[in-house]
Image (tube, rainbow over all chains, first blue to last red; front, side, top):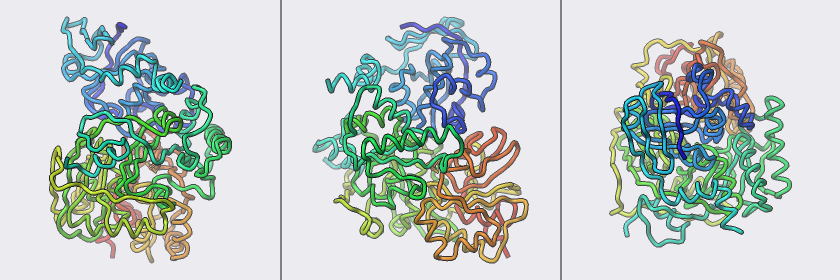
Length: 163
Length: 420
Ligand code: SF4
């Protein structure tokens, strides 16, 4: 699957309170959550991000609370994938479980500026910066997690194994 | 094979003789926890795949503690989902308002999590139970749903970092200061994906509450879990609470560590974490003049009885400055009653405090003390991210209960040493 979109750049340690503030956690409707995605962190992003755009962030993206509302809000806001130098571990699990594509690549983050057009090949984990022409290779997804993705998420994976 | 305590607990629950860091395992879970924010999504997933029964109705624990007593209609609806699920599934460990406390204080207090357990919770501070020598870690709602159905979950075995603390603690320094200092040194991703194992002579005599506060905040360094080797202090806390068997695991002498750090605690002063990261720490003597509007003493980090006793010692016969809102939140109903019996509540009320029922409340900007634009709070909680306690332009400073109590009297961040 190929994604083509504009890069929105964020720094390191973007926490889940920044992604979706706790005051909205009594909501679980993805579309409602999406209306507040990154509201505290970057109101411009919230207003202008387009479906298919890509978040490009520093290290430890998604640190803080275990709220699955965070990847859900990002996905529902139309973001096609998140590329970061590293992810906080609960967010990493949650992203897989909720079907938000994520890729780890230090080089891709350093080689991308806000507004650059990116083409991401999720199957091969390659990220092409269409502005600079550079191609980056993300960390491979562990085969075990790939199996979860192939089944369509953790719940489907379990349902399949139990049937 | 020589293993760390974390590796041994994981191996035992995966039915393996040994294992090594990086290995992917499937392990049996002793206790699975959800709250009023995370469980509704887990329950929805549980139902969506047509699951009928939870794997064990004694071991799925639901604690509506974040926005309770229900702060608004939406919160009430979330809690209703938990209540009905608990009833349909005949869960023995569902806590209604009146019995409910902050989950990470409530579970240990009720003897529901024990040494040697493998615990997962859909809440990042599930790592708190490492204080008892358990492996416990936070997961998301979908992972919780998977565990509720199967009683198992996959894990990647973490590498372990060892933290050794030596020397005698200074006055007003406790577990909270040790962990803040440590996070200040290694950074908010200093232990990313790893286990943090705490040891050393200072730890050997550290109270169980001090250990809870330390294990609680390992997630603030990015860690998967924090863990203490169980000992006499653990035994004292657990016996009389446990209703099932438990196991004391220990780390082998030759176990492998990714890193070993040593701290001389006699050099550590009370710590304050400045906005907006828990790693932004300063010693109390370096804080300067920071005026405050609100003080919160509570949360799963420092809402324990020991914390309230420390705060009462400082507030006794004193008053919070009239323009400072002092909010005290005992973490559980038992702690609440105990605070009344010991006369702590009178001291707080005379000092001008308001005492909240057990709830997460302001810790996550939920209710019971949300900050307005430009306001500043010092809190004994664990996170000071942008907007954590309310308005995105408000500020949270983190400290231990002694500093928080003294700051209420001073109207600025300060130490008990400054009080006459
Ligand atoms: S007290 Fe704060 S950190 Fe602890 S569980 Fe509640 S919201 Fe989370």
